[in-house]
Amino acid sequence: MLIYHPAQDINHCVYRLLSIMANTEHQEIKLDTYRLIDFYTLFPYLVSLIKPLPKPLNKHKSKFLNISEPFEALKNTRRILFELENLQTIAIQNLLAKNILDKECFEKGFIKRTDLQLPQPLADELNNSNLAQEEWFIALIEALPNVKFEGKTGLKARTGLMEYRYDLEAQ
Image (tube, rainbow, N blue to C red; front, side, top):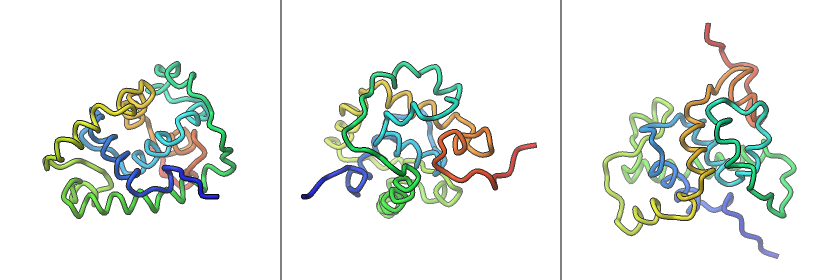
């Protein structure tokens, strides 16, 4: 039996990346933060497992409460994020090659859209899609880039999806 999931589709990954960048107020997003935003765009019901919920996201808590869990059971979310990283990297490299993402920002660990105009039908789709209209998606792309990422109180530790024990704490 063949089962499709957008987490394994490179084209869907490119679409999610463009959608995130087209609909966020942030000019640039840390690469690791983008990886988590993309993960939670695929699995928004997992936001409820972030403990404790960071303050920038906590004020949007109600937007995530009505998201139903899908039928599939995710046994190892860390592994899924790890496997998703390969697709995200390929998607980013493709968009860098087409000058849609800024290469200098990427070298500094950020993703940022260039001024290159996308074809109008694609730009319209990114701005008017069902995903772009979801309150939880808007909350996610606006709040997560404002959350502390590293350390034992950062987003990596709160999600349990990334290693944080070796992060340097700000003094």
